Amino acid sequence: MKLITTLCLLACCASRAGLEWKEKEVAMEVLPTQVFTEAVFRFTNAGPQPITIGDVRVGCGCLAPRLAKRTYAVGEDGELVIRFDLRNRTGQQKKQVVVKTSDGAETKLTTLADIPKAYDIAPIMMKWVDGNTAESKTAKLVNPNKIPIKLVSANSSHKDLPVVLKTIREGFEYEVVVTRAPTARNARAVVRIETEKLDGQESKTLKFYVHAQ
Image (cartoon, rainbow, N blue to C red; front, side, top):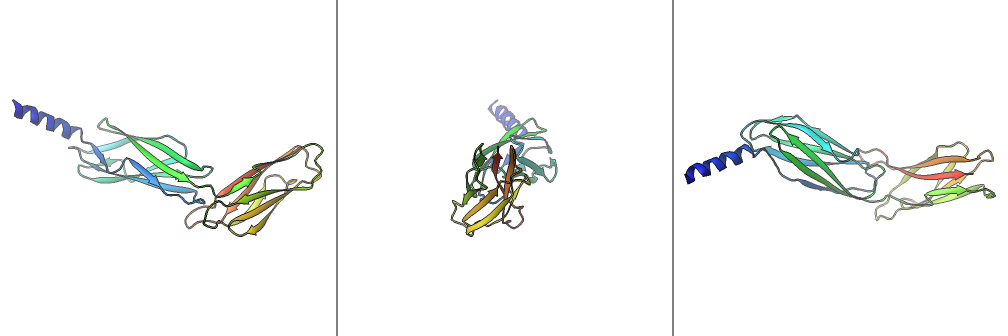
């Protein structure tokens, strides 16, 4: 009787083995000007039959899953790659991914990242109010990191609020001078500053905002 019970338990466990994940939490190291990174979750089909990954749900639009294929034979290894779009994000990031498989299992995976801020920008909202006759205003950009980050260009979204990028200390301190044209009335602009590209990455865009009443 004990032998039968043991065999039943072993058979039950084997039938539920499914995908064995080598890691369920991945912490990613990120540089201040990175615009994307990837977390790799490795697994093995430890069950008695082929398994198909049917659904991969991500907890954020900034995550994109990628699989080489969907179905894995008994004993076969695979990888689930999660691409993380880092643009417009800073600080501690914890995101979840839920994987559903053909054996009915549901596995929760976690990605962790601490995204450093490339530059502190002041002011983040630049304003001209009624009665302010200043022709130009200046935003200061300071790199709080120990590594230099070059800024290569600055552009305004409004033709009556043009900008000039000035280098104070290359890689660490810059100024963006915004000029208000006489025709700028109730004008709004987004000022975009581009960083130097990392290998294999796009340029990271920094932003501040301008309103001239």
